[in-house]
Image 1 (cartoon, rainbow, N blue to C red):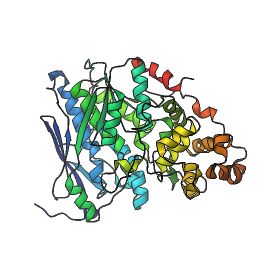
Image 2 (cartoon, helix red, strand yellow):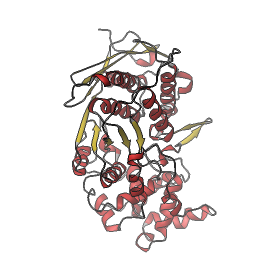
Image 3 (cartoon, helix red, strand yellow):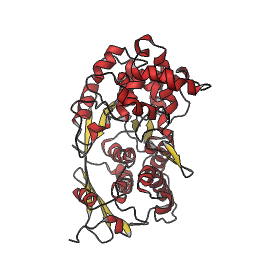
Image 4 (cartoon, rainbow, N blue to C red):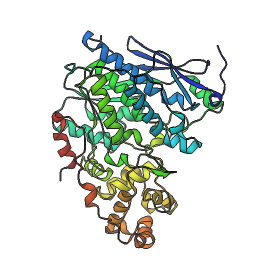
Length: 450
């Protein structure tokens, strides 16, 4: 076998081949003529695939191979890309160009790489007939991430009586506990990254954030065809479409694959290339983070002891917090701040085990959330204006006003925000923009209901 070398020296990244057998999809990649990087996706208790879904399954599997390659491509970020089993058509290549350029924008920013100049997928002109409807059963895959948003989506679907299955990718015990608490049927899909990827990292490969929501979305598109579901409903909010920062005239968005642009692109692609009756959407797209947090607070105590949005719980490598909330990261900061206007203070403190807003050492973290003398963190958090509105609301609440960081905001920061709208109410209003299929639209009213 060819020896592993630093992939930053590679010239070409190859999408080598993909296959499926007995519930296991195998996705193969390589740099130049180097060793094969083999990823496996395991679909538990996979049923026999009906003949009428075979073409759709192959289209979804090919898309998965091309999308999941982002985890490996970024190790070398080559300027040449080759798809060994046949160039994609123009529409597929354009989707991939957008995903790799925008989804790796943060990675490029941190590594000093211009992804718009590096990424261009090969393509050939081809006229492809639109995919037919498959008569997929009216069942919904609802991805569970362990945090508040997906649980709000679950409860909204349950309240309209939609047939849904909680699904997650990977082996997180925290997510498994949340999924079990929902009471829904559960589907846990396994994803095994090539172990050689970690060896490449050791040799000096480029590393950084990838658009993992896009990868999971492609996995679930395969699952929907395989198991028979007509909809995949993520819990991505409208705040996800807001850029983290702007750099040299380009927007860099940590959450790009959670944003509405990607959702709209993939929704249209799946309709055209996989199945006309396969819907991909976010059930929470019309709502801000604050509106969703309010909806979560209204769920009562059902999930308080199992949910967590702290990303340190979901590391592949490295230490994890001793409990569900590290109390130090941007996700902990934002969820605490966003819940505070809507949840009784004792309940919130019992969830986190401490009062993050009464800790002066946390000031810099909350300043970044409010985009005060810093840009928004590279994390899945709400907009700076949302954080400012939440903090301004707490400054008017006697139970919060004397806490160190709330008092500091009122004294030092709020006077500099003269003329800004710090009202909470506009953030609780729904946007009309979403792709939720008609049979699930009633769930939107439950999320935003007074």
